[in-house]
Amino acid sequence: MSTSLSPARAARAPAKRSALGTLSDWLPRLVLAPSIAVSLFFVYGFMIWTFVLSLTNSRMLPSYDFVGFAQYAQLMANDRWWVAASNLVVFGGLFVGICLVLGAGLAILLDQRIRQEGSLRTIYLYPMALSFIVTGVVWKWLLNPSLGLQAMVRGWGFESFTFDWLVNPDMAVYTLVIAAVWQASGFVMALFLAGLRGIDDSIIKAAQLDGASLPRIYARVVMPCLRPVVFSAVMILSHIAIKSFDLVVALTGGGPGYASDLPATFMYTHAFTRAQIGLGSASAMLMLGGVLAILIPYLYSELRSRRHG
Amino acid sequence: MDNVIRRRTPGARLARAALYAVLIVAALFYLLPLVIMLLTSIKPLDEIGAGTLLALPQHPTLAPWITAWGEACTGMRCEGVGGYFWNSFAIVIPAVAISTVVGALNGYALTKWRFRGSELVFALMLFGCFIPFQVVLLPMAQTLGWLGLSSSRAGLVLVHVVFGIAFTTLFFRNFYVAVPSELVSAAKLDGAGFFRIFWRILLPVSAPIIVVSVIWQFTQIWNDFLFGVAFSAHDTQPVTVALNNLVNTSTGVKEYNVNMAAAMIAALPTLVVYVLAGKYFVRGLTAGSVKG
Image 1 (cartoon, rainbow over the protein chains, first blue to last red):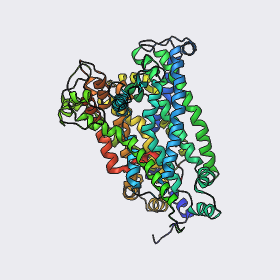
Image 2 (cartoon, rainbow over the protein chains, first blue to last red):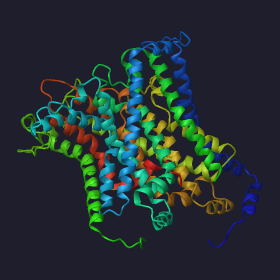
Image 3 (tube, chains in turn yellow, blue):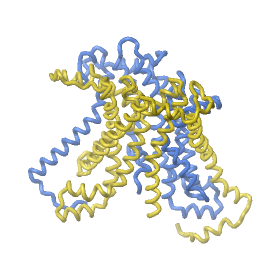
Image 4 (cartoon, rainbow over the protein chains, first blue to last red):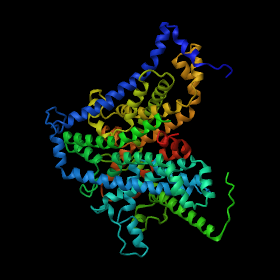
């Protein structure tokens, strides 16, 4: 550009107030208005609405007979809810932990000037493009004891090999972990790899010159730089874990019995198929509480770091 | 770039070989389920019971794909997943188009026409990305009923647009923030209006972020199951719901090859998008998650 504008000149411009000028002042707000209205109604309004429903004794249809926090009390006394909630802790913890270790590990290995890095990266990441329903259907087939992995290994001659987690009430929740890790760990790898590529080479070279070994450099120099990546990954993965619904439906159906229920499936089952709208709403509110408990510290640190630089 | 001289001692070579071995084993872990899905989908049923997962098909056949597409039972009906596949497209295309256009305009207004409270507006909308959708299901069902959109494709389009614009606005806002504002200020001085500036200055540089937004929305909406299962009827179901019904419909013998073919059909559109535009797919996934 040949002409450069000083901010002062740009600021003086809107002085001429014609009807057209006022319209163009308001146009951005008019453009945003529908989205704001939609978000106020469909996000915030609906959250309040669900909260109101959770205070009623709605069953098949929403009713507005208020019963205070009775639905929450009932939820706290509900064995199935506790199974779902503790499954979420087990599933979420293992899913996030394994994805982080696997993702960071693969990213570090891929960062060693690997031939065919591009193709490997593509292979590691493609499951993320699939629907959790597809993932669930595939792993249900692989983990099927009579025809899947167990049958295959037995066919190789290991007759006593047992891998029946899918139909074992104590282990079913771990099959969710396997499938979810398969789907999402490549994504964590991509996050870490992007982070690694962003680190200044000179820091690593300086450490190399000081005679530090490669594992030591990664542990002491590189990983501390990647703290924001770890933070984002934990945030996104725990979010996926709390929302996990489709995977449970497709892989275990919440079973055997309700052994592998998660809060998301608990809510859906009660609100839509068991005519317990009040109880379902209460469980949805607790899920929201769980998300906020993760989100608020994240947003807080995000805003703070932006303000400082 | 790397000018450190590497000495290739036998130990280093061994470590290098181990490194590749680990990477290849990992690649197998990610690839095998897809390979097995594909192999199973072209085996006749009798080979599935007799052989193992990795056995190559003796008599490869496309019959399971044909059954999955047009004949397999999904619940009460036996018309395959073909119709539902097109349903998904009928839902995805308008939803992606509308949410991308709205997101672009929002992002533009929020960055190039800042006003008091515009940051608050952004924060307000951003929150929509994070809520667990269970919290909106019941009110949504009732609202769709009031609007006369219960169990319709239009209703699902509306739902996906409403909860998609938070993401698309985020993408476009973060992209436009980095576009220099001088040009926009100059155009404002010359009297160019809101839409004219968008059309002439912002849109021509927006190709990458439009691709990111379209791909993100496409995969999200195509892969959606929760809204699909909650707000659709027999004839408006998306393919993910139909696939789940197909797999769980038990009439006599379980046709695993048909299940796998149906899963492949449901997976193909997003896989194709990923293979063609993987770079943009990654960018969408990491947008807003890695600062920089």
